[in-house]
Length: 300
Image (cartoon, rainbow, N blue to C red; front, side):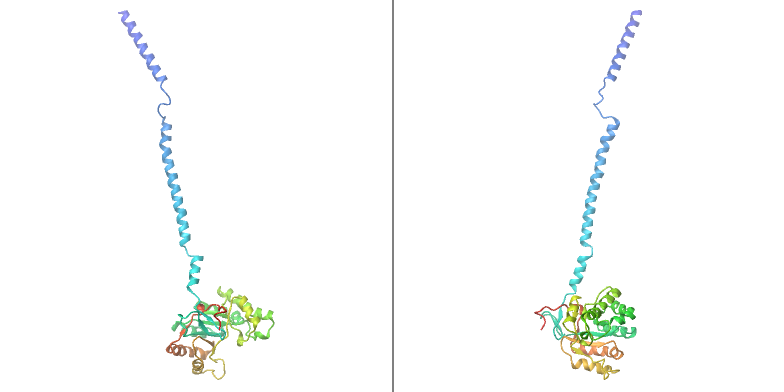
């Protein structure tokens, strides 16, 4: 009996010893730990957002590039500028002449000098121009703009074209080169300061100029013009006689007529009938913005 107990105790000791060895000798690198499991599981997941982020970044960069290409700006400004393509030029007689045979030559250019004077007259002229779908050049004097910048802004805001008619309306041909330049360039400045855009056309008072006047106009990228059809609305014979203004224009009418008028009450009254009669004769009103500089081969 005693021997059996000894044998059982000995067997138990052997078993306990073998279990302890098995646990202590278990390989530590055979399988990942919990932290290693987390690391191995989370690594691919961390890499995926990075990859996705890179793809999104590429797409965003591409989108920005695309939007830059599609967004308006200099390119669209160039397109807009290209839309107003020069179709006409002024010849040596200051008639409006087409640049090619396909362009309508039965046109007239409407111009008004010596403003801006009064809102009522300006609105009257532009209301009539709008009625006939016409554009005109309003040749302004600097001293008048200084007195009434709001009237210049009115002309500009209503979509008409501003021209340079010198500061003081003096005979420029009788002035020194320096004074002549100041008379022209001071108007360029005040008009640009008031409207944001400098004039593109210049008409000397009384049509009086010389080579120096032409050069100063060229230096300022101005198209130089006088006229080829005078309405004589400034003449005392035409004062308060709208019908006389109309007849004077019709008597001199020809394709490309560069019509000189003024900001005067009887001219305001005459304008609607005048434009109606011109249309009845098959004439159109040239947009001044379609008149560009003439090359040597164009000018005749």
